[in-house]
Length: 332
Image (cartoon, rainbow, N blue to C red; front, side):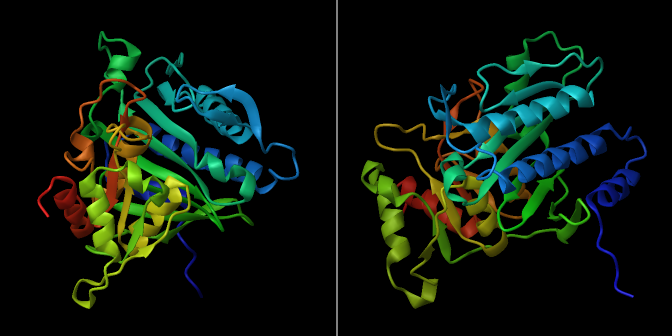
């Protein structure tokens, strides 16, 4: 008889058993993130039929036009975690201020990018969600935002949901990276990618090359280097860019290579958000054996100054990221 795949709930319970001191709250928190993923996946499957494509006419704190699905995804995270009693604070890329929840004794803080790749919403291309979990400093006499402003090394879990041909939940709790695929017929996530390890070097790069002439010389030289034919070093690399950070990083996590959203000459801080995108994806990729940097500094070591702080991101296979750093720093 074929062995039945491991469900997300079973996997989490088995992991919890290795920690006798665990109360189960953290395990439930992870399953609730999975629930949010199911709910958003359901909305996305029927988006073209339910008249929820297009924009709301509003602009978010990032200065970006809000898509209807952005708002729906954000509201779904809020609804689920307002009722869960598991988190004391929910911060979202879509909200100017973190939402403080009245859950006495809740131990965790959750930061989310509720719908990554919003430009893809109206054209049936991949989308994602990104999350970062931090432990609340119970009794700390600090403001909510100050408590959230911790380095990425303080995350206790991070991951993402990928909405593509299938829905996947990929996460780490600091002991490797595991991927679960949603089986819609039974409504369960099943373990499909156990202990993911990113290759040390890949053959793919992912970047918006339309910004080439805005980049500093070192970044331009690195992209030029990747396109030169050289059999000994496996070049040229293949370019793959979907416009969804989660989808592009997921491809590289499984197959190797490098993703770049670098700083620009006139905008050295870059575009991506440190707290909602850079830190959680850096934790995932590092746990899989990869690397993540601004080009100058390890992402997880960046000291956050504001909740919506932007940061350049170069992430992927360790050797490829190291090579990119060398060019950006003028060492190559």
